[in-house]
Length: 591
Image (cartoon, rainbow, N blue to C red; front, side, top):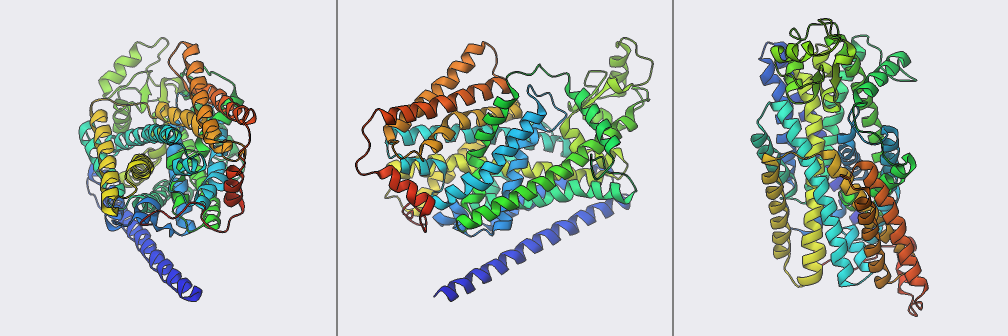
């Protein structure tokens, strides 16, 4: 019997590897075709838009091909995604989560503290929380916590928090995708919003988590190819990589100095750097959308393996993006400094019109407006000085080929990578939101006897409504993606992190966990209100850290003043989670 199962697994793995190899070969061929079109004289604007269009069509096709009416595939991707592919998907979601904070950007907290916090949270999600969730057999953290603490009020509270967190991440990723399409395709906001929404629906609606995970893996490949090709061209042209150890340390230092200067116009830092690191690490480590690929793996060991692959993949992506950002920062100075503001390349005015590049401190979408902006600057000498230019991260992440004259094709492919990870993250977040409401709330509370078709219809309806509602809101109003991600991290750290820690305290009961949740949320609200200003990242992380500690201590204190459970249900649950041989939760109907 085991041999037959192993043979079936081998056949399925070979089939999966074949599809993945075909997809990679198809994208590589398409990329080469786009580059060839650029060389034979096809209009640059057409060549530039082909990359994002190819990425959107590819991700949408993946979602359509993985359509399913099986519970296990929709909520858990059949528990059959190979570890390397799940790891790449997890890496893509992690990079997408950090994308709004790419330097240079006007963060209100140290970029070093942010990177350390995201790094610690990524390690926690990859090596601890993700494998733990997979070991439990649950479809989500909300289901795991509700099983450990079986109380309706707590389940609904956790579902509400997970839904809010997932919505914040979804809105941020949706916004990033819209901006990427506006830049890459030169579209109006309404059209870009509609196109991004359709792509998200096609990724997540037909196959659920199956589509999300495979789209995430594809997005990782697109990002590596789109951002890696300009770096490879840089090396082939004899350029030195701006890196501190293995490249050109002087160029790296110069690039870092320029990006630091471009970021210096932001508001002052708030809060302790250590508080930011701890709060961000806790929030990212238990962030619901980020854990989706771990749920899709075969077992706990596979989830661990996927986590190690994700760490390696994220490091490679970070290295490629770091080189791209640094090289683009130096190329921006080389291309623009010393030139008259009315005689800049066309791409500079286009980027400035979209708010990605400021000329003399202002957005200048035309030569006349650029010249007018600079004439009013004190001490202006007629040509641009380094201090007259300021670029943003999204511009530097995609503009290296254009700045170095490699052609619009490679800039379009780089833009396609950023759009792809944004769409994959948005699909993962909307899927997590629909799972929380459709499975953890509807099915577990009201519809335990519902047919598979009814369950999936409810979840798909919620997902479609969430995407449509968010799209309608974004058509006329943009959101700050950094603020949305910061809110998601803060809520996750304030409410989910202490409950997950309390789940491993044997004395804790459902009433203790409910008390902890209320205390944590109340403490976070009190810290934010006491600041008397708009919640910045520093304020949010400080409030989240205080809330996490307050909630955890409140739950432990409540359990100590109450008589211990004579049946030791908490201890049995913990022992099964840590030392059990198979999934802890009873198999879901239809799974």
